[in-house]
Image 1 (cartoon, rainbow, N blue to C red):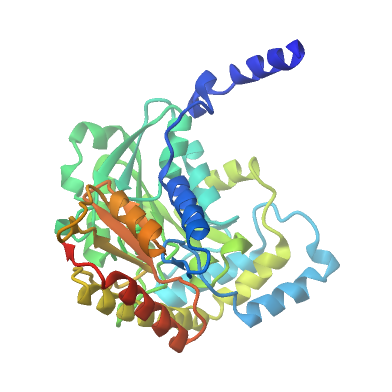
Image 2 (tube, rainbow, N blue to C red):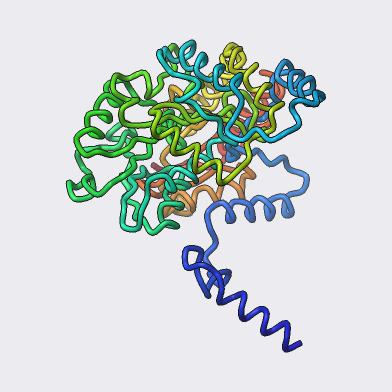
Length: 417
């Protein structure tokens, strides 16, 4: 008994400060996604016979294209594909460079020196700070947003400076608002367009401004672009690398998770500045041994068939149209995004004659606990909730049924905004 207590004590006091040190595991705060998970479990338990409509999950509701799956099966059966992939195979890198040219108009990407595969974009974001961040260095991130690069910046003793994304600025960061002192200390600026969670899209003019700002302050740009090919209503897919000078200051991360329904396959790539790609490859070489070669070859097949993504985008565009119409009929001020599968709307202030919502989280908890509709709240820059059009539905008729059910559940109250 005493031995176990001794072991528990020494382990408890051995944790790194970056994850809480001796207090690791004692924090009683419940994080947002854990709250959502618990609320979903409670709702299912309390209402076992009512369908839970999940508009919160940020992953596709369908399998990868049959051609991609068939290519995986074919390549997985070959003995030559069984070994370590290390920093990737030429076939995938060549497909990635061609994809950037065909879909985004990015010319002159050298597949040998300017592309490297990654096991999805999340590990790439986690590793990039190891390439650049020393203690005291700054990474600039936008909020609301995806925090992984910032988390690892802090792990390395760096600092994170947040820039709010506001409706008034079309959910683009106001670079002029970044203090000179911060800009001069910054090593990295993280951007993500089309954006999670706002759904906002960048413009060529904005990316041109980013390049000028990066050159002025000697800051490296990391553009996370997993939704870049999922665009609607005539908006052409836009790559940061298509802007003159972008390759001088940064890299772009692509993933097949969202654009090809390949979330669990864990495959993407980093492209752009050759020196950054080389340094990232060296760090990556000390973190992983590469994605399974058969997956890389299946992904290369996918990248050579961008019409797969176009078909997926048609589905999400249709669902956005239906969801926006339904929410606006209920009093929301929803605007269809030009890209991504996220719809970002301001939370109501309350229900007429009833309860008040002090935050997006309050409203999100109301939706899941009382209406069995799951969403994700964001309160970093105003009170918003994120709806995702990746809900489970096979075919247009089923999509309409789900949207009608959402309208039905929410029409027995009148929201105040």
